[in-house]
Length: 387
Image (cartoon, rainbow, N blue to C red; front, side, top):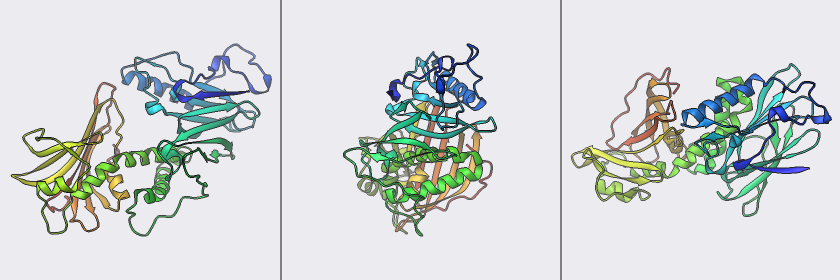
C-alpha cells in the first residue's frame, strides 16, 4: 500500500495509534516512551510556535516505524505537519518543510540520522518501511532550474540514509558524486562553481565543532548555501559599486554600476545620499557632504530567521573576506568587521550587524555595508562571538 504525504498537509500516525511492523500490538494501551531527542524536537516546535505568537495544536506530526530493517522502532518527525494555531504555515515556508529521521541502535539509543527540507514524501509499506522524498530547485543540484523537481528513495547504509536523486522533467540529470569537488586554488568567480567547495568546507567545520554533526551537517550546509544564493543580487551590487584602487566613486558612479538596485526618487533619511531596494533588502548610500563613504543593505522582520549572508555571497563571487573583529551584544546579536579584497577593486571594510529575534514578537535584523573611501579595517578581538 502506498500513500503520498504532501508536506503542506501530511497526516502522520500519532504515537498512541501506531501500527507496529510485523503485526504486533502493544501489550498496554499506552505508547512506548518517546526517546529524549525526539521529545526535545517536539518541545522545540512547541516553543517556536509560542514564540511566534501561536498556540500548539493537535497536529499529528510524528510517525514511528522501522525505517532501517533491524526490527527496532525509529521515528520520523515532519515539521510541516505541526499544527501551530494562529500561525499556519510557520514551519512550511514556500511549501517546503523539514523532515528528520531518528534511528534506534543496538545500545538502546535513538539518534538523529537524517534531515532534509522537502516539498513532499511518501511512505511505502514493507520491511523496512521505505521513505521516498521529493525536492525542488537548488536542492536537486547546482545546474537544476528553480522550478524543477526531483525524487529519490532513501536507503539505509548502516549510519545514515543515502539517496540516488532522479531529476524531474525540464532539468538536466545529475549523477551523484562519491565526494565533493575539491576547492580551487584561487577564489571562484562563478557562484555555482563555488558551491561544491563551500559545502565540503561547511561540513568539515560543523563536524570539527560537534561530532554529532555528521548526521545533520549536510542539510544545514544546504540551508547555509541557500542564504548565500538569496544574497547574490545584493552581493553583486556591493561589488559593482566598489571603486578601483586609488579612486573615489561619486554617487552617479554608484547608481550607474549597481544596476540591480531600484533607486528611490529621494533619500529615505537626511543622513543618506541615496536609498533604494534590491530584492527584500533596503539599500542605503551614506557619505560626507556629497562624497559617498559606504553602501549598505539591511533587512528587518518580526520573529524570523535571518535569510541573508553577505560575507558568504561575496566569497562565492571571488572576494576574500577575512573577519578581523567582532562584538557579541547578547544572545543571537552582535557585530562583525571584515577586511575585504576583490579583483581590480580597492580594499574595503565590510561591517555586518545582526540580531535573531529572541521571541516571536521581537524584530530580527541584518545589515551589511562596504566602505567606499579606502579606509583600513580596524583590528580587534574575534573571540567569543558565537551569535
